Image (tube, rainbow, N blue to C red; front, side, top):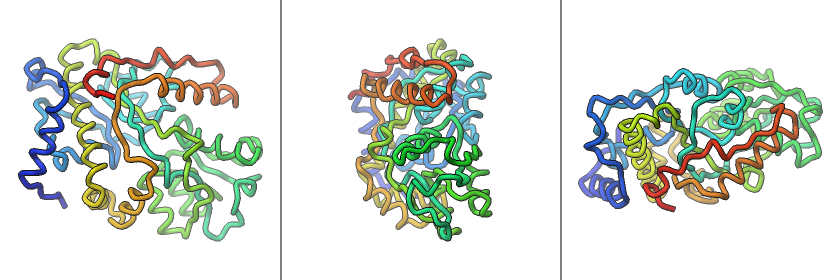
Length: 323
């Protein structure tokens, strides 16, 4: 059910959008189409709530499972804009995917980590030895698993790694075919609810930066009108995240509307955050964090050569986003 907005909500959203420099709408043809990947609970679901739904061009949303398929869509020039974790861009470098990282969502990693079957003997990370553990390759939960295992002196050689998509991993876990799963996001509620699953590690703070990124297709950025539209869309998403962080109860209701999970579940998750998500400009600390991640993947031989992440980053929208 859509949330009804009053005049104050609309004015607040519009005011936030206009408060900072923004692209020139006059430079964006009304018949331009921006192709955007979205996943449940990404910012695009809440434009109306934040008062920024008056997009002056067409937006085509691609509902893809994420990870590898998003990179393939960017390679095929079927996407202009995508939210993702820091990890897929690292894996995209050897294959030359035409993406640039243009902004950072400084997120939270509470309620993310490792779940075990409710009736299993897995109580600590050390108990994973010899167990079947599902993760999504080349994504943030691939990195989560590396770091989680390392806390107990374990590596992938000590477990039975089972790389699966988010959906297939959840199905395998619910069917009892795997012993543990790296999880986060809205799927976690389903696993906790249906399988009496329990957290072994429920918070990745200190193990992962919490940074997520906005990627733009480099070929789209070469088109002046598309580049203006990307900047405009970026500011709208920034406004959504600002709105969400200031309206936790209403955000929890809307997240529940989108996913079917209880409103109370999300409100508790929001209240347990270490920080509210913020969409910000590219900065040196973010680039360093991603470089550390790339070096870790190379060290464990998940990537066969060193990766320099700096060429992935594009700061053209820094003034637009502010600090």
